[in-house]
Length: 136
Ligand SMILES: [Zn+2]
Image (spheres, rainbow, N blue to C red):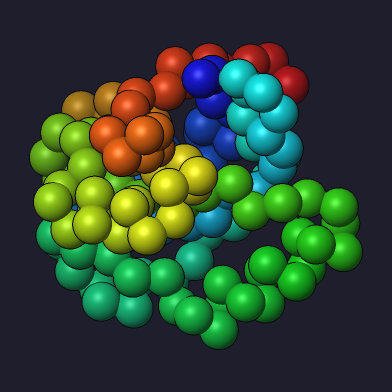
């Protein structure tokens, strides 16, 4: 599967990753998923209520507010973004949560080298997505 994000969205994610360091930054990805392609149309940064350098938890009120806003805008929730002060590989805790909603995409950015990877659960296995950064 391919995940398309724009250069501008990518810039926002990297900015948030730097800003929140050493804590994990987190955000919500909205857009469209069709067939083998997911397109990010909107990125919304949210508070990591854990304020932790090793874990994140999205503020549930912000999450609900943004979900209903996006619904009105005709966009669907497609997944989460968060940063890691390590490699952009999902932690065992991440994978545990990923298994609860297997369709969701998890985009992880390393706050060490700013590399980015995306994953989701396919047939009960962790599967990588090909991330493509587009001009718009
Ligand atoms: Zn994580």
